[in-house]
Amino acid sequence: MQVIDDGGAISETSTGGPARTATRESALREPMSAHQLTEVARRLRRHIVTMTAMAGSGHPGGSLSAVEIVASLYFRVLRHRPSEPTWPARDRFVLSKAHACPVLYAALAESGYFPTTELTTFRKIDSRLQGHAHIKTPGVEMSGGSLGQGLSFGIGTALAARLDGRPTRTYVLLGDGECDEGQVWEAAMSAAHYRLDNLVAVVDRNGIQNDRFTSEVMELEPLAAKWRAFGWHTLEIDGHDISQVLAALDEATETKLKPTAIIAKTVKGKGVSFMENNPDFHGKAPNKEQLVQALEEIDRLDG
Amino acid sequence: MTGTASTREVAGRTLVELGRDHPDLVVLGGDLNKSTFTNLFGAAYPDRFFDFGPAEQNIVSVAAGMAASGKVPVVSTFAVFSTARPYDQLRVGVSQSNLNVKVVATHAGITTGEDGMSAHAIEDVALMCALPNMRVIVPADAVETAQVMRVVVERQGPFYVRLSRPATPVIHDNGFTFTFGKAERVREGDDATVVACGIMVNTALEAAEALAREGVECRVLNMATVKPLDEDALLSAALDTGAVVTAEEHYVNGGLGSLVSQVLSTRAPVPVESVALRGYAESGTADELLKKYHLSAGDVEDAVRKAVSRKDG
Image (tube, rainbow over all chains, first blue to last red):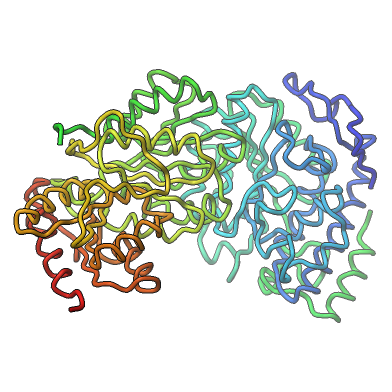
């Protein structure tokens, strides 16, 4: 991972629309290829299973399902400065499904916000890495842990950016089970009302929530039609196909006068056979033996 | 007393003034903007005013996002809709994050009147005081409200301001200066102290005048800043007068009376009586409700007599 922390300016090419001519002052030396992002994704997966195993608790399943989305954002799309987490012009990534913070912490550490060695403190006393994402962690934009609030928060950052005339974009990652929360739809309605084309909602459609499959707990379908009906430009993609993720995020940037929703079909626990599509690993950490197996499987994933 | 004035109208007008010097000030409302007088801000600064309809959970979280981006958001709607309804959003999104969100709640308490118990916020102070980092201010009148609004907008951190529906008695002259976190001694007296906030400050003053005719002299403290509480003023009052009565237009549990009792019981135990609501009220005029639900000057007088009678020796 090569992150420039020296303020080296790289002009926007791959993700920039007309309004995004600002320089990327801390960015990857070169825009990462899909292959490089795949390797980043592998590292994020290793961190996720390791930190949850070391903590003895946490939410690996919904972290693993969001790896390609988060990797694409942090290592290709977001303009951010790991050495200056509160840089006002940064793009915002809001983790509304804050229980999936292992994937966020892994991405922040790999980006250089804090050392990867700090990931071992996850969920432990005196750590900056709380059990649910909290704003005190460098790089974490929003305190979460109670579902349904992140999209509204993202409307706030998007409206503030518009008021300031900043090209800042806001990306909110929601869980699919989280869409049971009424506030998500209050927010969806208002984002379209205010024509927030600087706001993107990505729904991690892994099909499993805390107790059971989403279709058993509360039917969400037709989910894309709901977002369209609420006035969003809505895309459906394979959330593990990095080229599809990047193309959707590019399309969102090009889309004007509407916010964009990306329904990313994913697999809960992706990359670890015994976690995949297994509701048990929504909120359960792997044990030592399972960790060994998980790491072996992650290393063998196609790159 | 020099007549009556509306705290919510003054708050709305003050926001317009503050908007001039504070370009980051933004106001968020929920389809009650004529009632909160924030429509005045909307008319003056349409690009900094956002109506989200009656979707208070969304409003509070949007405000948190704006605050995290350097804006100074004021959320203004009725007290019932700005506390209980978005409580989780205030808890996780504002209090736990210690973000610079200002909640200006109008139509608090039973003086909201005819709309009935669903519209009577009598739990809001308790709810807000139970949030770490949240500061809670209940101005005594319109003059104080104007000053409070300036302090709240210019001071970093989350605030809750509690205002009334009806025009309420004005007890301050225009030279008054509000000091955040400090009780204001609005009347001198050595026999007992009435600690009041909001409309009950004027009621306490009326009660004190009546008691003076009986030879009982009351100190009256305007405890506009309910959180953080001015403990020094309370301790002085307990030591100097030996009996304390609290008076608030709020449920008895968790409000000013509870907070004062907590301080005094640990640091200066003296007889304490509380004038507060014992349950939900009903539809009626503000004056009828204050009388029926025992928030009148006579109720304060009775409480003072009882507290004084409980003094040692």
